[in-house]
Every structure is written in structure tokens, then in C-alpha cells.
Image (tube, rainbow, N blue to C red; front, top):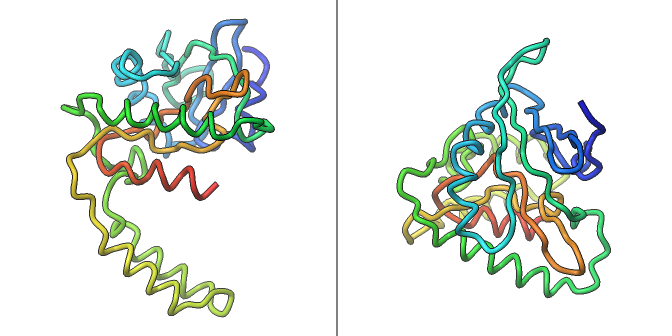
Length: 211
């Protein structure tokens, strides 16, 4: 099929495995059943979003069906030039940050009518934190003395009281350095829209700051 794409190895990609196909294409395959619905999301929405954002994003060229022992649908995308920010020594990080901010502002201004709301396809990114309330409290209990349990619970309770007061907008859902391609000391493209949707855009800020 092709050589594994360097920017999409285990360190840079979790939901999918990507193989470069010739000079201009990339084959993108979900790595597990939980990620299979992301193919249809990208096939539906990437062509719609692409004309409205100021940087290149992947555009599907073909939609593959299960077969030859592989159980999920898959995609062929156009190849985008650039190196992932996670493996690049940025000499002008402020320029990359400005370009990313312009990209996210433009994305949020795209008409959101009919866009996918938060759900299992994006692991509820863009939705209320309460979805993970039970899981978070259980994790704090399991950690025991490794963390300040009362302080962590206080932080979590405060977060639960925060609500998005604006209209729903488009979010990327995984603005991690591995999904930002850099070229000539600036942001060249944004990839991996499998978790995109319409809701609270705070998830994109969270992804940037936690890395």
C-alpha cells in the first residue's frame, strides 16, 4: 500500500494509521472500532469546511469499504506538505500561534447548521464536562495519596459549574502538536478532523495548553 507516513506514527497518531500513497495521497485507516465513525464525519464535513478556513486541511479523494480482512471504512486524502509541530524545533512560535488563532477564529465562523453535535464520535468534546463526572471522581479516588484528592475534587467541581454561554460553533476537537503541520517557520496545514463537531470551542484551547 505504501510506506507508513512519518508524521503519523504511534507518537503522533492514536485514532488512525496513515500510509503515504505515492507523492500526492495518504491512506487513513481507523485503528480500532471506537474510531470507525470518524471516517464518515471527515468524508461529510471536510469538503464543506475547506473553503472557509485560511489553511489547507485534508480533503477526501476516495472512500474505502471494509475488505481483505480489514473491518472498517477508510479514506484516501490528499497529502499535505509540512512537518508536525511536535517534532519540529520552532524558531518563530509566536507566528505559528497567530496562524493557529486565525485558523480557529475562521473555523468558528463557519455556518454550523446541521453540523455534528458532541457525541461518541468525538468522545463528547465540545459538550458538557458532566459526561465524565463519574469517571473523573473514580480516577481521583484510585490515585489516592498520589494527588491532593480534595484539591483535585474542588478543581473539578469548579469546572463543572462553567458553561459555554455562546452559540454553538465549529471546533476541531484535537488541536495537538501532532496535528499541526509546520513549514518555513509557520503553520502550513491542520490535519486530523476525526473529532470535529459543533459545540463549546473550549476543547480546542484545552488541547493546545495541555500539550
